[in-house]
Image (tube, rainbow, N blue to C red; front, side):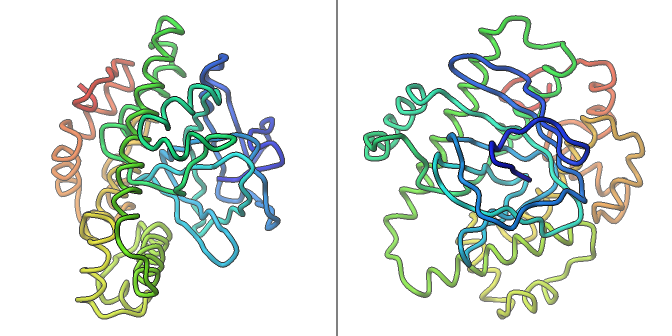
Amino acid sequence: MATRKDMLPESTEKLKFRTLYKSGLVNITNYFCNSRCEVSKNEEVCPENYIVLLRGGTFDKCFGRKSFNANVNQAVFFAKDSTYRIDHPADCGDCGTVFSLSEEVLREIINKFNPAYAETPQPHFPFVTATLDSINFSRNVALIRQIEDGTFPSQPFETEILAFEIITNILKQSFEQHNKASNVRKTETASLHKEMTESAKHYFAKNLSENITLEKVTRFVNSSPYNFVRIFQSQTGITPYQYLKQLRLREAFERLSSGEDDITSMALELGFSSHSHFTSAFRNKFGATPSEIREKQRYKRFKIGKNLIV
């Protein structure tokens, strides 16, 4: 994701922002940054608290020498007044949703999950990224598509309720992950494990369409296969292969919901061995075939629910 002084600038040829919903309580903005989007290497200061949910592509959020990869598997947090840089590790661009809440509402939600962070002069996020589960990923995609199509919701009240549900669920899960990690003693080894995991995420995002092997990844992160698999799973909760497959499937979901027509070509481009292999994995993940998702978008019959797209 590319940023400018205001984080949400007016649309340009390479970087486009579109406000989908705005009120005194919640703002929802859709953004798209193409593969040639130029990003300043200077540090930026975030003017508000933002939660960014990618629907495609990837970017790196950098602090000094530290770098956190942002992709469709994670929610990304921008705390008000924090400084950072944005880099693009892959020539694929990125797109997603920017959610922001009023300070009063955000403080109330954070107070529910971790009062210490809500009592600061301004509520903020103690984490940069957190795992984004399949339910919130697909609900975000469906919400954006339906607002753009004008098919849902019919009332502003409904928009705000759904946005609150998505944001609250994400913050709840993020604080649970953060609190659990905080209970683990921080050591130099733990820091190296986190760096290795971030490095692997970076590699996956940059080489999404390539024939990725365990040997290639472990060479990139400078680890033995055994240690890499063990450490990555302990950091993310899933195996490296599951993480990569989820990246590819979520990229496919976004492209199909955006109107992608050639399913076979897309499947091969995203690293699946065949149309049938892709279809089987997609159905297992989202409960519908790629063609069904494509047709539902074509006829604007998305529904939002806990069972993804129904």
